[in-house]
Length: 442
Image (tube, rainbow, N blue to C red; front, side, top):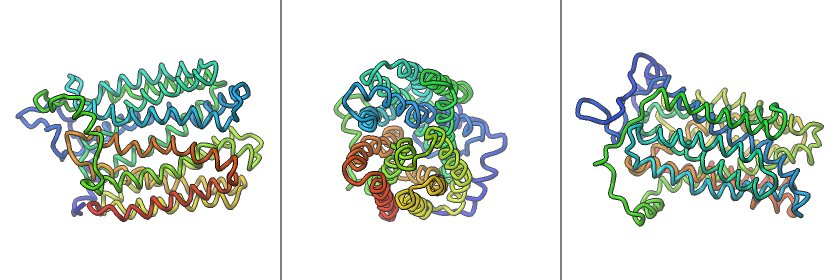
């Protein structure tokens, strides 16, 4: 990625001013080509609306993951012959398998969508509505099976929103504004974690918690869908359809696209490290730290993490835009997160956990914005932005499958929570080091 003397303006003046939204369809009179590299900076209102939609997705995911699903697993486990940890691992693991398929699938479908509303907006609306319905059904679950089915439905629908929200960035945002936009999307992500945890904790019960998350997930996508025009793909630009070529397109050879392959692997490792730590956080506070109110403890740790993340996520993205570099930010953020996981392993106290949560927020704030910008810089083809970002986003979902498979036996048979967080630290460290193998981005 090349640097430019005008990068500093991209982080300040380019996000303000009376810049019109692009027209809703391409044409010969200056309308944007949906397959061209964007050059017109996006407005703050567009970034705010897209970030709110992203916030809605993460509320819908993390209210259940942090509080509601563990509570249901604890209620349902006695009749299954499984521990609460094992039941939770199975449910979240099956849901993550659905996510693995849904993210690239909806990205690819949106790439080929020629609807009047544009390529991405129809899927954002449908996914938001479907997510709200799925969360309500999950709240009514009466046992492990309906709990698993409900969580799979949540993963399916909300991944449609997430896949298309992220694809809108390379569609509309110039390269040297993507760090800043990625920062705001990262801020929305952690606000979703906090908001989802808060709604689930304070709503007054499992059913009410799911209802609150459902309402927010639907309401959050509406400002973007109603207030901003999407870029349309003309029918003549859509490639001929065949199931064989559609399915084959999901494989991107790491040998042919090495930067894409290394970017995918590093994101997978850092997210696997984070997923291992988050999955059993409620149980860690209860069983290892012996916190008197572990649910409230999770909320406090999430808030500490969020404050540190919000202090760095936008600043890091803008700073990365200014200097025209991505890799050093991603490397150092991964190192900080690995140190935080190691601290939890070495100092299993409430004080040590708070300090680790602060370090995790510091590191993940930088990672969330700059790594996202780096991902958009290694996409192979403009026509397949949604699908290719969906493949990269599998590196966010696959850890949800791998983390339970690794964590459950470690906690049960191989040394408990101390070994679990040491493994998390080592995995995160590997992800940070391997970022250096990406050659096409500085």
